[in-house]
Image 1 (cartoon, rainbow, N blue to C red):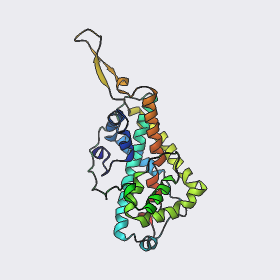
Image 2 (tube, rainbow, N blue to C red):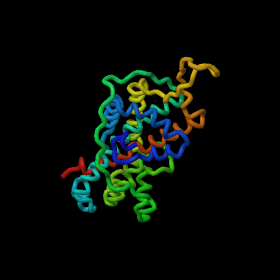
Image 3 (cartoon, rainbow, N blue to C red):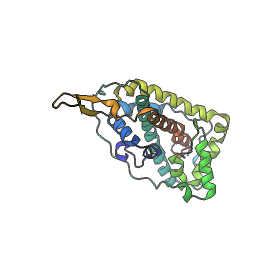
Image 4 (cartoon, helix red, strand yellow):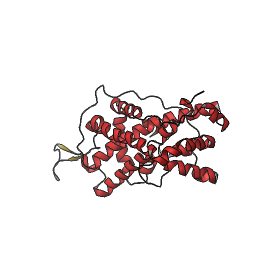
Length: 274
């Protein structure tokens, strides 16, 4: 998954799919061809461009300095935010394609113009992703509070980004202080809904025509030999309502946590004043 996503981490959504029998392999077979196309990368870039900065959240560099988040730390955090932003946009669009196929939307069989793109290099590794059990209780409570900010769906999974940022508790404290009012007023939730709606439009218009379930081949006729081979794309689909529920739950979970990286970017030192 790291090689396919071209990021130095595996997002929570893929680890969650691995707990569902058959879902990770099937989903991976659907999205891997999309990840080699310009269509997905262009749609992801458009989705990232749809996210604006919340008013009043920009913080000057002196705030981070005072919280013990120095210039070197800020550069690492900025890199982490960029990588999460890129991965979240691609993951969300990919999973919406999977969800559409599972609810019997009709995918196309078109080939994206320009063919496959060369795979960019995977960026260098980030600091280790920390588990909640490794953290001091107060920091764990802060992460759980941030994870609820702007949520569109309830869920028990905690966005990986906040645990990754736990290496810098001062940064997380600034994020909480900057976003607590927009969260309380509902502005943050509304800000999350806009890119999610945009993602659905991008998926339907730009990506679903190229989405295709993985195919299995079986010989035509039950007893004959040498006959033509029929393609049964639906045979590899996770069957019935149970499989659709899994995909729907996964898509909703990713949608709920999708913009966590963007909300942190609104107070990122990358865009803060000197």
